[in-house]
Length: 165
Image (cartoon, rainbow, N blue to C red; front, top):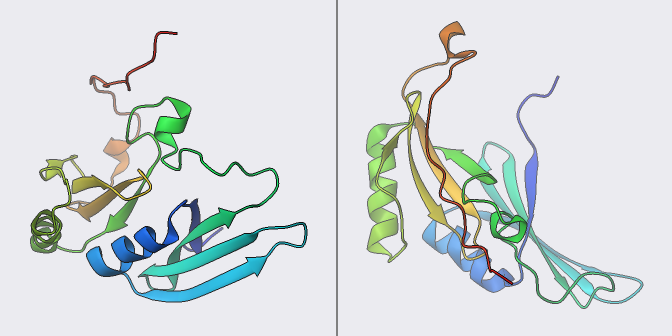
C-alpha cells in the first residue's frame, strides 16, 4: 500500500508562465528544473514544485519532439469535452482562516477564484492555472466516517459548449 504520493506529472506549453504562477502567485517552492535533450530531436523541460512534505507537482514542457503536437489543450477537461472539475487536483490548507487568506491573496492578484464552497466534509475554493487546469484548495472540516459510504445526492452539471459542426 502507498503512503501518499511522490508527484503528479502535468503538461504545459508555457513553462515560464507556469513557473511564475506556481512560484510567485501560489507560493510553492521551485525545487528543481531539468532539461532533457531527446536523442531523436527536441527538448523536454521539467520543473518541480514542492506542494507538501516531499510531495511535488512536476510540469513538463515538450519542444519540437517528434510525435508530440506543438499545440494541444493542456487543460485535460476541455480537451476531453468534459465539464471543469472532472479532472482536477486539490491541495490541502489546514485552517479555514488559511483558506480565506489564500482566497483573498489570489483575488488581490487578479486571479479568478470561486467563493468558499461547503462540500460537507471540507470547504474549498477553485481556480484555473495558466494551463487551464483546475486547482482546488481544500480545508477538511471533518473526517470521513462509515456514514459517508454509499451516499446519494442530486446535482446539475454544466457541460462545456459543443460546436455544432
